[in-house]
Image (cartoon, rainbow over all chains, first blue to last red; front, top):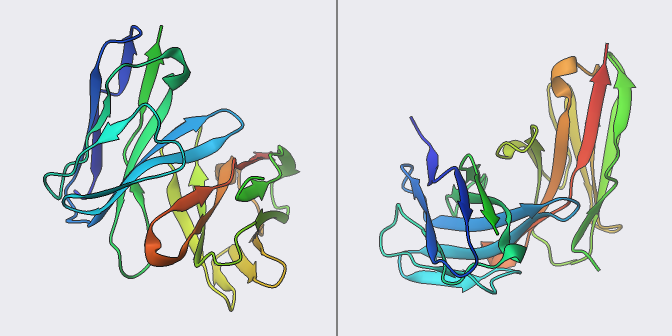
Length: 113
Length: 110
């Protein structure tokens, strides 16, 4: 089954404790992206990647890191989480040709206390 | 100024009604346009892409007006199952960044 998976789905952590949210897709998509969704603000792009070893900042990259060492994986790293990073996070992937339809993972609900 | 703006609603309509949503975008260089559907904090799913000539998929019709920089979605014969939040999405040239509107909530009532 074609899908994007994210882990963990739910996470409660404390300020300053490094964490990683994993994202994996099995569709051989070149493009992958991370978004955060906050009430009234919609989805905002954090980082994106056009292919292996190619990453770039979205609109809200502060406090986040990413890496793309393999085509299928695109982890999101919070080196020192803060309460303002409490949010719902979505990973997405897409081909870079054709319809550009993005397939989204199920989301990770992160709470930083 | 937000890149993409939508009326948050909610739009409360009876079954069978026709409802239309608009969305405006600020960057005239925007290249690709989409409507996504999102159910209750679940992941967004593509409803339809929006083409310059307009396009239709069953009860759904999408239009693009580049001169006025807006996109519309028309839903005919609304079903209870159409209740969701509809997200307008634009993509900048070179296929790098995507901008999402904050969504328009639709409630279809019996």
